[in-house]
Image (cartoon, rainbow, N blue to C red):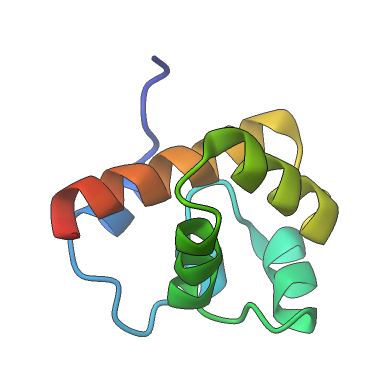
Length: 90
C-alpha cells in the first residue's frame, strides 16, 4: 500500500464537517472546480456518492474519472482517503 499524503492524514484525523471538496486527498484545485460545477462542492457530498456506490472501489474510481477526469493516482488517493475516514468515523 502506498504511503498517505499529509493532506490525507489531516482529512482522516477529524470529522468532516463543512470541508470543501478539495480537502479530499487526490482532489486539487482543478478537479475540485470540476466537481463543484457538478454540485459536489463539499467533501460530505462526495462521501454521499461514495456511500451510494456502497464503498465499492471500482465503481467509485469510475465515477470519479467520469465526473471530473481524475487520473488513476487521484482516484486511488481519494478512494483511500474516504475509505479510511469511514473506517474511523462510521
